[in-house]
Length: 234
Ligand SMILES: [Zn+2]
Image 1 (cartoon, rainbow, N blue to C red):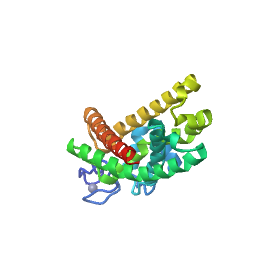
Image 2: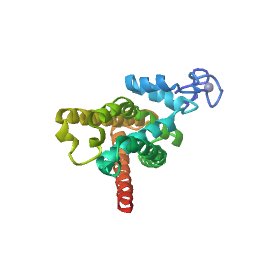
Image 3: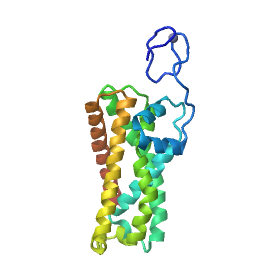
Image 4: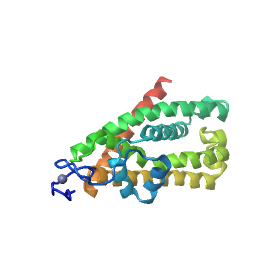
């Protein structure tokens, strides 16, 4: 971005000129949660710009905590952990508690992996921005946690997490629809991180896709190793 006063080239996300300190674009001190979460779905490119320019990356940890809860319920589903609990009301607090811890761990591991890979491919954003780009890309998954998980719990109850009988055999159509929706939501988040990488790290489309794919592969590896180790241990 060129300074309108002294023509000095500045960083795209700078708010004042590094040479003459003139005003380049609006300061964004804080991010409003609902506005940013809504706009990231509506106009992701513009909203990622706002997130990168914002001085405080508000609610990033909060989004990761909710994502952790979503990840925890998925792990309870995937590893059929429901057999270890008597009722859904015993299971839910554990899934939430494990989820918040998982969210904090995920925030650290995922941000480190993503930032490292983006930097290797020539990305030029700060660690804080990598963290915020990831956090706000999780909005579709977090939205589905709030809107769809209660429906899944009401529809299948404990059968969502146990293997006998499998939830598919109880209500096949509902099961396929809800699982399909979860898949679509995950794909949407992956699309958002890719857009966030193009905007925030100023990488090409191809490099952004590679960044996101490599990060996901590494994170998936770490997640399944950790979950496998816990399963063997417990
Ligand atoms: Zn200037």
